[in-house]
Length: 82
Image 1: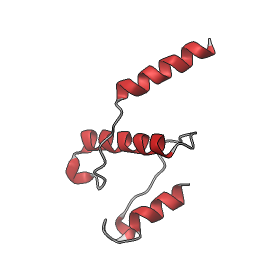
Image 2: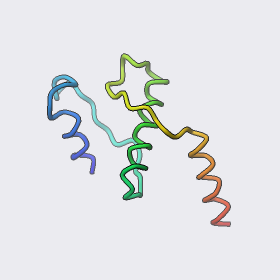
Image 3: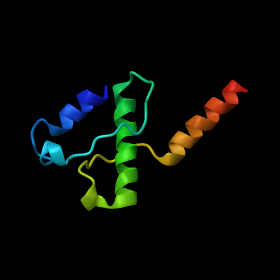
């Protein structure tokens, strides 16, 4: 629900003028588990902080999972499909 997420980010005006914000869908998560969805969002936020610096990222959520956690889950899925 990209438009819903966009609206959540701009509704209070805290992050600046809506016309100055860039919004893009960077991944799709096929899960209805809100905790997991929040963890994935936090992981992407941290990736952007690492890539572009904290001053260029508005979100501050810290990821409770790591890249290695995701890789381990991916490896398990691949093994299961073989």
